[in-house]
Image (cartoon, rainbow, N blue to C red; front, side):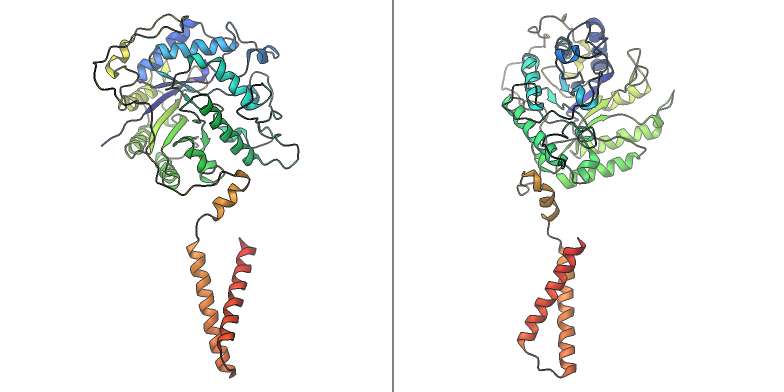
Length: 444
C-alpha cells in the first residue's frame, strides 16, 4: 500500500533570496506563489530571504527595496499563508554565505538561548523569531542555514572563532550550535524546527552523529546529484535509513540537467521519480523540497506555465495530495485569496461537518527502532561512535591467536621434555593476550 509524501515543498529562492534589493511587487509575488501552489499541490513554499536585520543591510552596498527586509519577509509569509499552504523557512545570514557584500562572518560566537543581543548567533536568531512571531504558524517548518555542514568546514566557517585558540574543534562547535538551536526552537514554541539540511556524505562518514536526528525524528539531507544514477540514489537512501532508523526529508533536490531534453523528458528523469515512489512506499522518504533553479529561465515553470520538467514533478506531487489545513485537494485550484496588507485576515476555508476532532495532519515521522541512548558530550562523541559497537571479528581473531599459541606451547614443552604445569599454561595465555592487545592498539 502506497504512503503519502507528507511534505511537498518548492524552493524558489530566485524570487526571494537574491532579489532583496530589487523585490518583485506584491502583485507579482502573489502571481508567482499562486502559480507554484496551484500547479503542484505543494504543502509548503520555501522562503530563503536572509535573516539579517535591515540595519545590517543599510551598512552595505545593497539596500532592500522597496520594502525593508522585515516587511518583505512578512509580506511573503502572508501571501503563502493566504494561499492556504505553509512556509518552509530556509533563510540564512549573509555572513554565512557572503551574500550582498557582507563578507564572511568568522567571529560571531554561538551564544545561548538566553541571548537577546545581536552579537551572537543565538541572539540573532532569537530576535528574528520575535520580530516575525505573529506570522509563524505551528505547521511551518524551519531549516535555516541550509547545507549547514558545508558552511562549517573550511577557512570561511561561520563557527570558526568560537574559542580563542588556534585549535578550533569545528565538529564540537557544530554540535553545540545544533543543540542550542533545538533548545531555542523549543523555548519559542516551535514544534517543527531543525529541518536544516545536511550533506549526506557528512552523515554517512559519521561526522554528524545520530543523536542530531533524534532531536527531530527525521533526517533532512541534501543530495547534490553529480551524475549518480537513480539506482545509486536509492541505494544511498536505503543505507541511511538502515543505519539511522529515521525517515528522510530530501532537501533542495532537482533533476540533473543532463536528464532534461528541450522537448521531452529523458527516461532517466522518470526513473528518479520511480525511485522516490518506492522510497515513499517503504516509509523512507516522507518529504521533498524541490529546487527550482537559480536562473529565471530554468525550473519547472516557463512564463508561469508548466514545462516538461514541471509536468513530471506535478504528476509525482499529485500522487501524494492529502487534506491539510482544512483545504481538500480538489478545492486547492479554486482558492480565492485576499489582498495583502491585513495579516489578521485569513482565507475562507470550507466549513467542516461537526463531529469528533480529526487528528492533526502535520508531518509525524515513523517511530524509530529503540536504541540505547548516546551521550551528547560532543568533545568525545567521535570516540563514542568509534567504540560503541562490539567487533566480533576482532574477538574471534584474538581467540584463534590464543588457542594457536596454547597448542604451540604444549607441543614445544613436550618436545623439549620440560615438565608441563598450570603455571606455564597461564603465563602463555597472558603473554599471548598482551601481544595481541599491543599489536591491535598500534595498528588501529
